[in-house]
Image 1 (cartoon, rainbow, N blue to C red):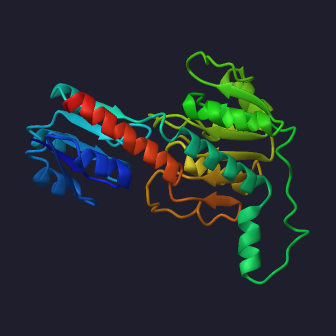
Image 2 (tube, rainbow, N blue to C red; image 1 turned 135 degrees about the vertical axis):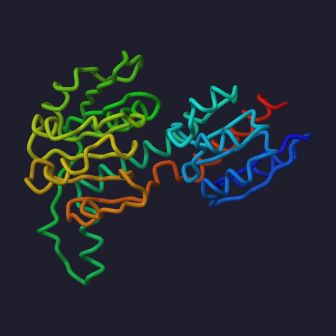
Image 3 (cartoon, rainbow, N blue to C red; image 1 turned 90 degrees about the vertical axis):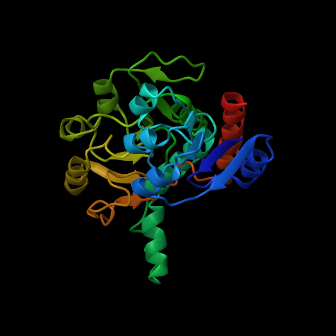
Length: 299
């Protein structure tokens, strides 16, 4: 019998399928700290997480029977892959499962930013009618810059093209796609675009900092549904205050939940509590992919 620990939420259907697999014993225990995980993980052959739980080196070292670690989502920054590799533990994720969820979320934030939706909602809830003051702009005819053009970036590009936008992309590797995007150097993208959206993994240092903001058009819009830290938060705040950045829609932050609410409180920021992949359909696909991975690796 292989014991599987579900340390974060998992789609209900996927959980039922996992429990029905012969030889699997499934335990759900959410909201554990590192210390809790260290105490709990001995005896388990696999651990499944989303974004809340962190599988650190001490957790991995305590998991003497661990064979597989799975993240039901995109990215692996909450799993110490080096420690897992040293122990011969397989690490997997579900990068394709929530691509559409994140792309749609990105587009929703873009629309909200150009049409002042958040300000309009707050205004109406204060029983005001600020129709003239909240005039926005269209996405049609604008140039979108996508930094990081993998699965999610391509899905965003498809939707942007349907809106009549021109799409420039920057990536550290050649972008191979039939979608009508133009890959350009980062400096060219920064100087040309009206909106920038980021879809990259966690970085050692920010991709967008003070120097990069200085190269952008005045009134640019920034959307970040990637990871905290890929945009320098202090530099972004300064760019918002100066008017260089017209608006920012942020799904992710350096610290989650934030400890410094300067960006959250800025009137031209749409703050979201990391909901990019939080759509029922995407979570269902992720859950079913987790089941497939565990059956393949542990069966």
